[in-house]
Length: 95
Image (tube, rainbow, N blue to C red):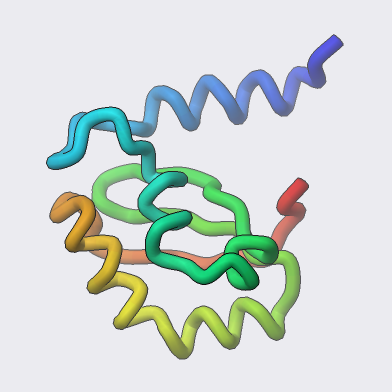
């Protein structure tokens, strides 16, 4: 049986994905294209609302590392979807 929190997170994620320049590609897909394989292993897509992409990071060290690359990451993400205005990182569970 699926946990209620997982179900709610899935529903919210599906509701927060809106029409973009590349239909069929989710914000999670945008991140996967913009990050390296090593970086991808330390993050998890959290939400996309009002142009803000929320990303969970597994440690403060990775949060700092990604914060240093925030501008270049935002540029890569804007190439895939001009709807993105900002990227916000938070420390949390990525499982």
